[in-house]
Length: 195
Image (cartoon, rainbow, N blue to C red; front, side, top):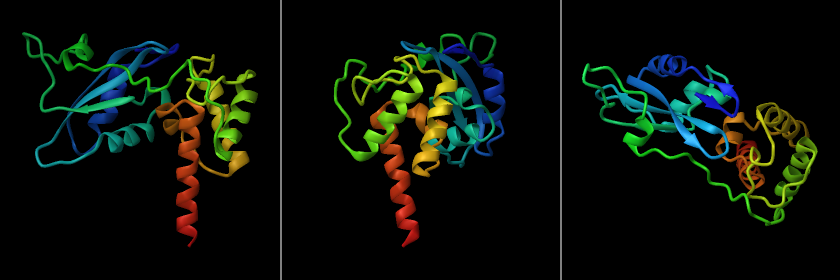
């Protein structure tokens, strides 16, 4: 899978997913993506009686692999399609399961920062990308960002706001609005735990 120039071996992701105690079967596959070329997705069959959420499985993978290898979507399915020989069918799985890339960001957006957190994120964003975003919903990658710049942006957020935003949270919502929402949730959680 070629995700924005980063090469991902599906078998490596399969292996990590299979190490989760609730997983009976896992198959990682490519989903065409308009900005990244391909996104990583996976189909998982849970063991009888076992429970696990998509988020739990994604966090399990994120703790063991580089962030760009973490599936952006994990589908919990009853079975994974097989070919005539009984072999799991990775190629074309996105079409067979009806999976499309998650691109929840408007690249034509012109909405300026509306909150103090969005203003801080926008300032760091402008410095890291060396160009301002036209709007808070624009996609970081569509404006020229890559995994190295994403890492730099997250590090700057940690320094300036003293919050531990994960790269997984960044990749889930790579916009000023999305990152600011993740930061606000972390700040709220810190305030609640301090009480």
